[in-house]
Image 1 (cartoon, rainbow, N blue to C red):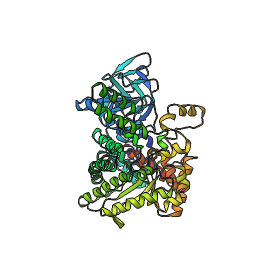
Image 2: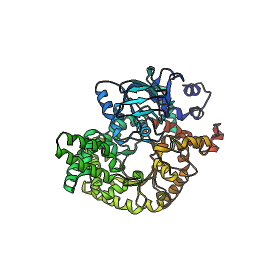
Image 3: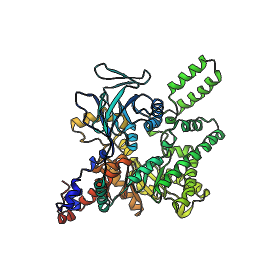
Image 4: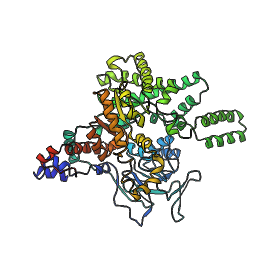
Length: 546
């Protein structure tokens, strides 16, 4: 409102007014807020402010409890020690998330920000006992499932006080400021969106496309997880093919709805990325089920569960983040690649009459380290697309997610087979620094901040001197080999104003971020354009970058 009034009264130019707005604060305007701050006396614990906004609800210790409560119209806070892939369905049902471990780049934080859910992570003074369904607070206070919590994802505070919430009120001034930003920025802004609802929200918030569609998130409902497990646990190719045949139309349907929401805008779809064991049940849970089946006199069920346990243990890895995931899945299990490419191509053809043109589909191969990996997957994908009727100019663009140091320094060779690069700066930060984002933010980083080793979390704002230099090398070598190579960023840094300024300096084409961070990215990209031309600033009387 101040910026608009100042322009209307002739006190500031549009450029000057836009530079008075703190882009990092814009995100919080889009979420419910507390009617008043949580006082220190009311705060029972404080964690990392991982996803902005506030939420109030009953404690739910499991995805199943959150889903059941939502069906009864009960708002819940999903409380976990840490969240994993199979908790995503619980995120959809809960109004907020609280974890005792992790930080701003943990699984809980990333998924919560993508969904626009308030989240507090790394509340290490909490003891979460999911089996006993108890939450132990400092001072010996014990809370149970169904008890009330209020969390503030903007401050990290947690209280048992029922503080009223206020819904966001965005008006014409907000839209006007965003229109100014769009007229001044050079960088494109896309969104990370995995569902039709995410896609629709992204368009409403001004995204120009989808820069990352994580296909594994389409498999997280209980019904689909059963099919994925059947595919993984299949003892022969026929059974595996049967499970994939049942998954294909489900994934195709998701793709169709996403493509319809995006219309003419580009959609970048990432092939399956996480380790397969993330879709399987915990071995301890399976062992308990075996014991129960045996006690109930059901040896057939116990035997089936024994096979599942053996296969689950076989798939477990000491360091799964650096194991059987990414492009390696497509090479080890080409049938998965085939299913996903066919689903995407069939969806593209199905929506073409309604969109009015062939949708702009981009297929992204994750975790590539060797150019031959990309070549093999690219050749297979293009052959499958041709079989489905999409060849030549209608074939999907095929590129890679640059998230390994080797990919950065060999970007010239990888570029020869890539239509685009998208920097996955979350994993690039992990692999470059040797940091596990799920562990160090709650343990190592606080010490590093205190000692002055780092001034901000490298998962929150890009480490320009290290990770940033790897990005710079990849940009120079990639475009040196292919001048027209499209370059984007799809890590969480794509929504951080300081990181966006760095990406602008490298001449990237776009950034992609969580839907609710799209307005932040639009304003930050405009700031980066204005501050990137000192001569223009002096002529216009704009504030300097300092």
